[in-house]
Length: 93
Image (cartoon, rainbow, N blue to C red):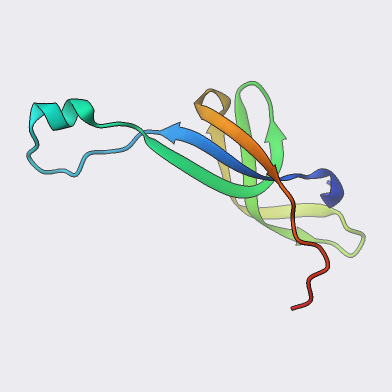
């Protein structure tokens, strides 16, 4: 993959959230909500079933990417929004 064609994004989605594991009133249990989650990374795949972002990648000398790590697949139906971010370029360490 050409890294110039892989956008950096922030995904926001709803996910299951477990209770605290102690005795709670039924009112509090009924009021329990799913978690709103976020992930930042490179959007390497998106279709009508899932999106996949990865946080780490190996960039070859020719600018291509053939390996990545720290990835997550999220069902598209769970997504609230996808925001494209601008990655910093040419920052010296």
